[in-house]
Image (cartoon, rainbow, N blue to C red; front, top):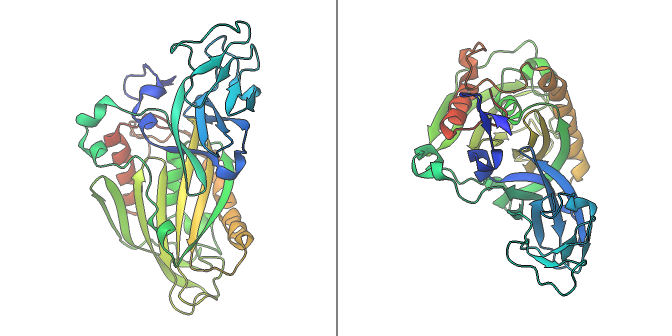
Length: 353
């Protein structure tokens, strides 16, 4: 349970709008055939397992019989077995066998709770709620895809590199707001994404278009904007956000500022909000480079994010003040201000206050 930021009353997260969005819970490579793994999403404990046909199943990590964790059990013959009394469940959640009653055929009520799952961008994604009553009344929600789009991953001239995971003691909205923020470059990423002598943020455009936040003409002077940078340059950014806990940026260095000709990249931020103030984070870099090792890009991303992490974990409150007017703002914060308004329009209650 979480508290509603407006009423302060308990809210069942599995019935909230956050549960209707798809969220990543782990890298596809983590989930091996005929094995199970415990994960947390929006404060809900889940078990993820893969069958012999490589299909992913996700269930509440709680046997409906006596509440034991299914993740402590085994996956045998494409069924997960409760470690307590040996009840067997198929991917549909239906119990197929109760060992204590070998002649008994379990009925439809003998089921484990299941959730939708799919794989994309090298991650396993889960949705806790298939339908939501607020959709008919919320125009902004009607325009959302509920699954974050990353068009660069479909570009044949770009190669995707997955970075992470990083475990961060902060809220998902704080992480997204940091990703959208340019004013911190000169202080947190000095010598890389910013120059302490050039902290100015020039005016830029930000708009909400068909339920999507877009920021353009965002410029920053960057000594080393990417893993292949050879000199400082003025880099232009574009930001795109169509999901409360994911975002995408694209940037193109000018000719001569990179060791790779015609270099460009897009970076997607993916967040698994495990609890209101603890997240697992990945980045996908779509880069115009098919020769360099993944480790080159992963090392650069490690450097950048590990500079962000102590700042993120120091912020008070850890929850993003969306419904409380407790933080000051300036013109350089236009994108984050729009993001906060969008969270409020969506009715997001997880990770905010």
